[in-house]
Length: 219
Image 1 (tube, rainbow, N blue to C red):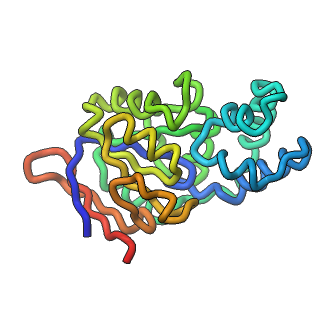
Image 2: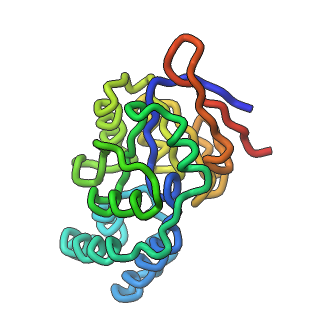
């Protein structure tokens, strides 16, 4: 059992609050086949990154903005395989409404569709791809998330599933808990702790105010 305190919680979306792995793999694989790029190469860098940055890495010769618009058009209609991640609704329901938000590398419209489709509460304000100039692993997105909550960055906890997101949270000076959903535990070693799923995390009021995380760690 691990525990730590915080004043606000910043959740990544895909791979943390929603399980969208199958649709993400399918869309990127189809795109790679059309562009002559191996799916494995794309998926090595795609998780936790903005679409436009993934394209710039794997296919710098393409018009990244045009390709991103096309991929986002496809993604926003592909909701059949988007599900609530195990334990997500229960964990969010235990948090104060103004004590958490979402920080995602996806566009705002897509994030809102996936959150609502999974049956999760939609925060009034959250951080999406169009809100930052540089995506994860740059800390900008998580710093904006702390600003939305009105909480000092060092008093925030980040819940992530991807190495790029973990690095973003750490660069922002935040405590980072990784969920081993889309990556192997050894790939998440930069996080402060790793949980098997959100179902192994609970949040209770802190003795001196704020929140206290308790999580069962693998093994």
